[in-house]
Length: 181
Image 1 (cartoon, rainbow, N blue to C red):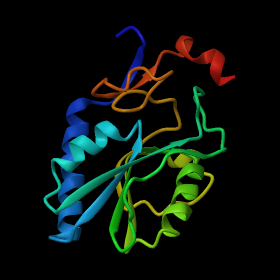
Image 2 (cartoon, rainbow, N blue to C red; image 1 turned 180 degrees about the horizontal axis):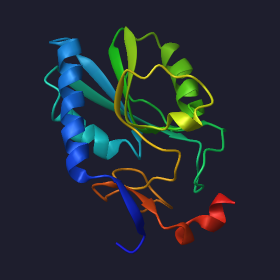
Image 3 (spheres, rainbow, N blue to C red; image 1 turned 90 degrees about the horizontal axis):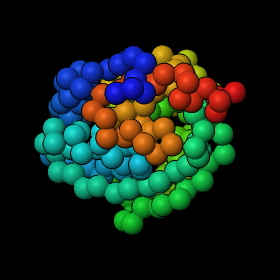
Image 4 (spheres, rainbow, N blue to C red; image 1 turned 180 degrees about the vertical axis):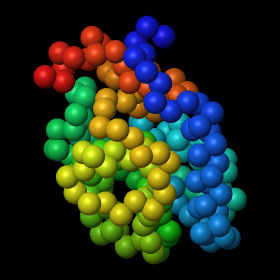
């Protein structure tokens, strides 16, 4: 693809790691039911692949939380644009996230979800961008630590495009340079 500057994580590496994460979650929970809360839209591909490898009983729910808009960096202003449909009270919850960047969005989300009295909350992220972290977040399951660069693919978008690409890449700067300034 013309937009790709460099592939950061291949499709094969993603699929191998997602399988390992599913196995780790299954081992931790055994036959205990889990509610996976997918953070839309970026977490959808990850959720679909991850759930295939979890042997524990699983239900899904979805939230949409915005702090980016069309920008390449988080604005720090968080808003819930789609809330859960089911109660999580007394349930074991795993938040399924595509990437943790500053931690501001997830910090807000954790406070919100804890107020709903789940039995437990854990976090599973495909990508962890620790270099850009502004708030410490207790991440339980991490796919890959990634550099502080603009990443696209496998759920991560640029202007709502390229989420369907099965690998993670850095786009050529000429595609987004004006927006990063």
